[in-house]
Image (tube, rainbow, N blue to C red; front, side, top):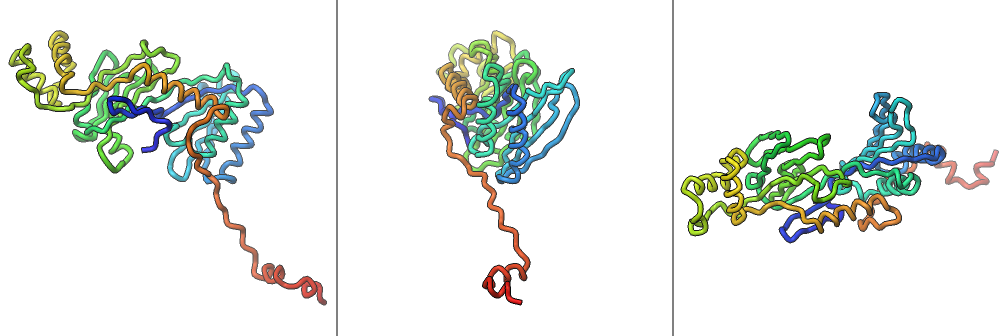
Length: 324
C-alpha cells in the first residue's frame, strides 16, 4: 500500500488522507492564462495522459481535465465554475494524495495553485480519512445509527457497508481493501470517512465500528449476563446477530461486555490533529515540505528518424556535398 504521511496508532491502525477536494480562486487573468498554457502542454512534456471536456451546466465547471499517470493514478482539475455568470476564477482540485502526491506533475500544479491563488479564498471542501487495519472483512462490523444505511454483499468477505451521504454531513464506508485494490499480503479492511475539515473533532459524527479479537467468551467473566444475553453476545461476536436490532438496554449492556472481545475502531483527538496538519502541508506547498520522494514523470521520447539519403549526406564531408 502507498500512503502519504501515514499515522500509525497504538491500536495498530493506519490513518491516511485518501481523497481531497480543494477549491481555489485565481483572480489574475494573466495567471489563469499561464495556468491554462501549462495544462495544455503537460502531455507533451511528461508521461501523463490528459482528457479534456467542456460543460455549460450550472454548478459544473466550464473546462474539465483529468490527468492520468502511467501507474493508473489520476486527478481532476475544474476551471471556471458555471454560475448565472461564469466565474472564471474558480478552480477545483480533486485528488487522492496517497496515489498522486509523489508525481512531479501533480506537485507542479499544486505548487502553482498555492502560490497564485488567493489564500483566504482557498478552501478544503472535504477529505477522505482512511482507517486501515489488518483484519478479515468478515470480522469487522459497522453499526447502524439514524443515518441512511446501505449494504452491498457479494460474499462474507466481499461486503461493503455505507452509512450517511456526502451531502449530509459526511459519508462512512467499510469495505475489503484487499479485494478492492487487488492487494497481496495479509487481509486489509478499510473504514473510510468523508469529513469537512471545518467541523471540530467533537462535532464529527464518528461511527461505531469494531473488529473481533476473539469469539470465545469466558463464562466466568459474564456472571452478570443472563443465559439469553450470553447467547446474544455469542451471536453478535460470530456475526450472526445485528447488535443494532436489539433493545437499547440490552444493546448497551452487551456493548460494555464486548470491549473484552472486540477492538473498537476509533481516532484520537491527537491523531486527528496530525491529519489536519498534513492537510495544511498540502495547501502550503511549496512553502512546506511534502516529505515524499518525487517520481520524475519525464517521458523519454525517441528522436525522429531521418530519411537514409539525409543521414548519408550528413555523414559525408562538406567538400563532397559541394562538389559539382
